[in-house]
Image 1 (tube, rainbow, N blue to C red):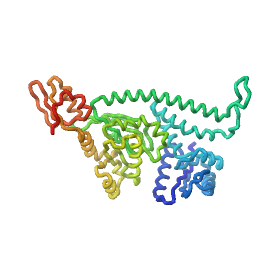
Image 2 (image 1 turned 90 degrees about the vertical axis):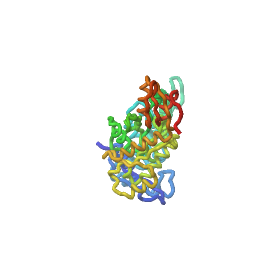
Image 3 (image 1 turned 30 degrees about the vertical axis):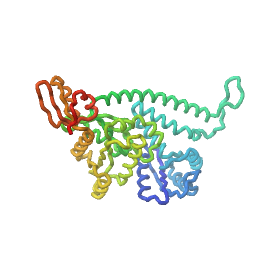
Image 4 (image 1 turned 180 degrees about the horizontal axis):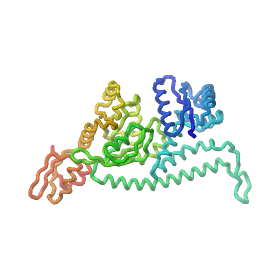
Length: 419
């Protein structure tokens, strides 16, 4: 039997109605991803935040009446409720009440597949639940006896549960340190290879995994739902002229991503810090495309990757019938590349932009490589862009652009930058 929900979206008095409607649709998508059926919804204007219910008591009574009439299993808020507000709602309604943050945590818990992602989500959920433990215990005065031979009330069940959760948090953090150490080792091994790297970032459901699957031809999980994939996936793609690129898909961002999750997924999102450049994928068909761009940039800045070299890619152009919408995107992002992963169009422009970014900061260099070292000559061809090549008795002379990693491996054979 499918669980049912009543959605509540709050808006400020001066907030545009269309923005509230979009927030409600996004919450509905999140709830659908969680597996709930939405039976009703409301947009409530909040002039002043109430410490009891977040919204006014009269507004709360109306929502409780509607949710009760519909016999829903859960009332879900688009905003973040404090632990006391959640308790007040549940006591007044007799219905389970959760907020946007709990919805996202639940989705992440269902989607996590690797050991690291599972641990990260478990840690975030534990830290979220710690101040909300009283929701699970209506009889907090229930006592557990003291140790044998002692007298006194002993501990309340709440204190016992709190201690258990704190122990679990400590254990999860310890396990994560070990798992992250293994990830760092794998990352160092990958970065030691003279192949440039890029990370795909963007708002959830913009088509990041679909782009990686299409470009690489590899079997990458793709689903038309929010947060379809959480674990980073790295694939090798071929560029023009035989050059290669290691491309990593990262977890999608969303408005008001819970800070516990940003912190918990830092090691996963750190792939963006180590990449040579980023590919920022946007959903061109969304009316909130600029808001999505700003949300992603905000998280990237928080991670320290806001200044990375970046290619902005607008996907789903097959759904974008409004030419004025595309023109508005181009006006804000003049270097944007328009693609359609579904129709596999715009890829030539994307590959050209990738090569442009790869070699923009790399000077032209002249290499003199011993004739016996054909492996090094092949490395230049594979990872760089050869402008001129000539063969001599015992040398291969190559004038080329090469990425920094290749430059480091060939520093002993570099003669001088070509001015």
